[in-house]
Image 1: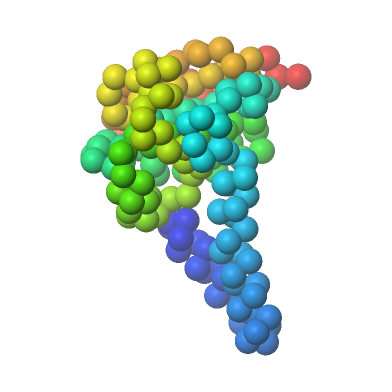
Image 2: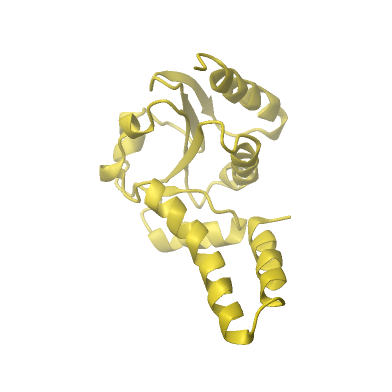
Length: 174
């Protein structure tokens, strides 16, 4: 079930329990707060991104563009990572490299998955991390050290990708 359908299902369940005005306000809050929380936790521009802010967490940094077919396939995988490792110090951050934010926003609406996005229309972060193809995912360990780079996204390699995340999550735990 997509994130939007899950959200709609939750909202409809809440609405049935309250008078119309209260239900409307609760539904609005339930729809807006998760997006606001994700936006607050992750910078929205490349200039604001600082890997040091995530020390102590495993970071899955994914570079994507709206024109990239494999990028569309990678979003459900990243959403499943977030769910699988909820509360286990994994941060999934995506970096969009489109020159048009409208195209990026349309792509995100199409995939229906809400993951924090940094907009990097000038490609500064992509240059910094030597991104050569779309998508590229970079995994950093809890100390901020680059450990794995996944170039492209291949569904038949999801187990390999997941093994890398699992390894980083489970090493050096306090």
